[in-house]
View 1 (cartoon, rainbow, N blue to C red):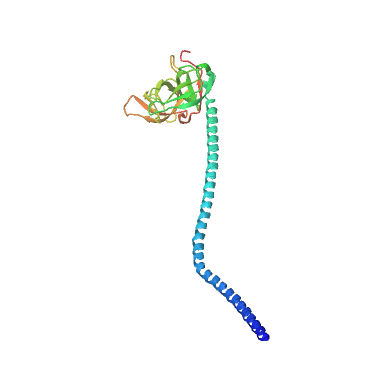
View 2 (spheres, rainbow, N blue to C red):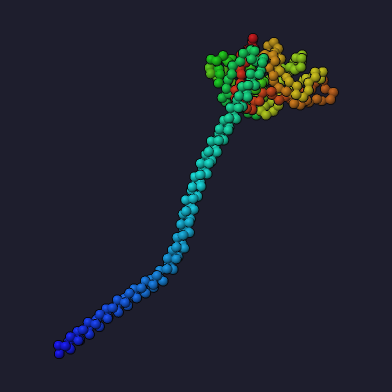
Length: 272
């Protein structure tokens, strides 16, 4: 009887062990299957997530790269601006040097004594043209003094303060200059015609020989506003009417009035 119980216990133990092994095996397969099923279910969503995420990632990277490019462009624009500024400053310095050099070539003016001044304000209009310079009464500048620039007459002082002066330019419509040409025997009046217009001379006797590119200069007559010999302008056009006893001409100022930076005030007064 005892032996039967023992055999049944051994048999049950074997059955239970077998069931446990089978259960473990089956459980592992189910788990693996479940993992496979889960992978099969999740994979499409994972692929979709990757499909969506990758372009977003590329777009984000593109935004970062675009920001870098924009920053580099700004830096390049800044450096280009700096180089342009240096180039402009060099050009201005070269032009100022040229004007200073030409101003020294007005021999008549230098023989009278001159004072170099810097132009601080340009105020030309269609009818009036004037500049302000940084020298005034305390520097010896007085009303009526001639002003030369770039090798020729630019105008004359019409108002002064302690440390500045206003210069009426040749092109001002209120400017009238006594001048002459050739041997100095023919006096004429040169009138300003406004900004960007040539100077004009009328009532020139037909007996007086005057051609294109002829130079006119101040005549220095007694009581005149300018000393003799200051270059004023060169003839650009002759206006002659057949049968007339006189003719007119147009002049270009010898001084470049459009780019004034420095001028020479001639220390001369009409009363002298």
